[in-house]
Length: 120
Length: 106
Image (cartoon, rainbow over all chains, first blue to last red; front, side, top):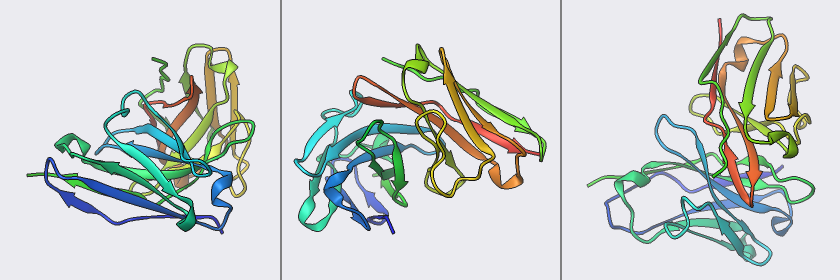
């Protein structure tokens, strides 16, 4: 059974750093990419970027380039999303999803989401 | 940048057919996917490659994509189908989501 299990809710202050995780199981981790999606309170889905766990190649949405870093550790089948300096506007639910890589690219399995709250 | 436009809301009576549109420049030249999101839950893929259904998605969900518009159709809509629906496509290695459509079944 394919599962993506994300780390729990976080409450941080502006300027703090943070890394959230997404643990994959039930499939060959390096055969699919992992994508990250933001959903701000009451808003829609926004694609942030993706990583190929086999070689850690990443590409980011222009909207998020330089603001977050996506990484992965294939030895523990885990992907990460990190911030070096959080802002209040980073308050959102963050989802990881498995991204297919053959023929077309869609997101077939999703994590349960990690709620990040940034407040002074 | 590329944009996908969806109606904010669609209403349908139980048992009727619901259609949700997604418009984008030459969208028909790309693959469209659709995701269902119920309150407090993660998104679920319901249609990929314009018209294919993942395992476990009911046959009442179907999709089409031509010209500038992709359409998600739910035949015999059930109360359990009430949710937000998002279309998605790719443009220059960037995934783009539509703004989402709230489907109300009443």
